[in-house]
Length: 616
Image (cartoon, rainbow, N blue to C red; front, side, top):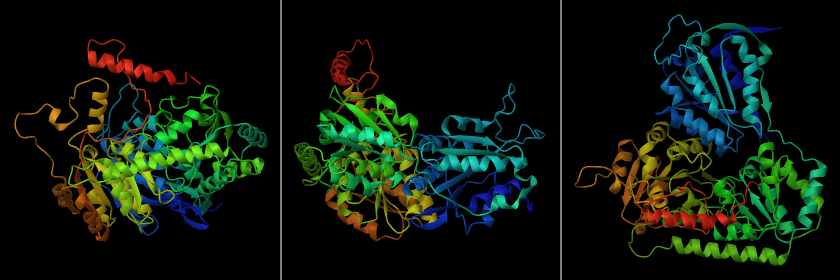
């Protein structure tokens, strides 16, 4: 057997570069980018090896370990999980900074490879710089914190270990059901250890994403249930995108005339112009979709885990005889809430179900109801987006303007605060995909970092990032990253002077405003200090400007489109203007209270609970 003697760092990088994937008939590197902040735990061995392959695996320098791992997550999502980003750090705080990003990847079922330095296995230099010591268990390091937010975790303590762990790590990131983040800890002494590896371990390998096939008996049972339905409804989730089932879904609902609504992750699976697209569902959705969910007697959920914002904490389904069918590659997702499970790929399941149904169609009256309800929602979105004079802007007006001004191929991205609901409620999809609301982990700070990663994935089109002032303050340094690396973004900062959406929740539950809006924070008397976001972005090298109102927005956006580097547009947002829909969502309220306003809020809240499905 032919062998090649390599250090662990050499072998790791050589293996990663040899992994390829076929995407739309083209063979491409599976690992398309690497993000690195080097320190004593990863610079001397791993860093040099990344330098040696920078023409095959480009490495970009981040400013914050958390944000560069977020960029890698967004890169994978923009590629529909078919290409993967890497983030590498030193030990200690550099590593633990990535835990939040790992949580995003884990919750959203997205691939991410994290590689961090670790303490010496020999323990001769202990305690080393940045080492957390556990005297009762000396093998524990800060890297053990990743175990709660990864699908696969390993610490490389011997060079031969790579031959077992790397294939397992790759299979985890490529598995359609168990896809998620992988963490590898590299002790500083082990990185430089040499070993005689089999040469064939480094041969090029072309991967493909598996498509688990549905059982014929399951497809037959689903078809029978649909044929007996009076008001069937499809819920399209993120799995439709990852399966590449968008065209099959559109064909399926047209042939069988089944209204379809979308989850946040499933948004833009269909064009908004599709006559059977009933809009977004749930607590941050549309009255049209929630109306259809309340009426439906059979729901076919495709590629969704039906989280609480999608189901209104399981209150939107009002038909007592409702039956749920779940097509999902994940067994645990497919069997939730007594659903009839089809544990299989969405695309192939739709094709086989289509053949099984033949010429069957749902009621035309039901389809017409869906169209009428959807049109009401679209008209409402247009009203929300309408600009009257020079009034202070609303989120809906900003979103309406961006929706109108973007070009084919451009994508829009946001994450936390008030923007996810506003974008989901108001966006009119003019193209399939190109839409990212990170709402699985709902992580403030993902926006700008995610935009950087999405731009790396889509270099020929603009990425429009919508970010609130709160998220901007949490994590904004990738404005500089994008300028430094030449990855232009358009960033719209919506400044409502605080955490306004949580202030709204605070008030809606009977509580007084406290510690959310800047004006309600504990601070010295006198003038309220405000951040000049335009100046701050300009200091990071970006173009920036603040518009006085929406009358100036179009011209500012045109300048950003024409620019050759990242541009930031700052807009003041009225913190009292919100889009809404008729949907209950469960929040924790006190069982007893001595506050009349809270007591009334609890009473109203309990009335909404009447429609919640109990444990099924």
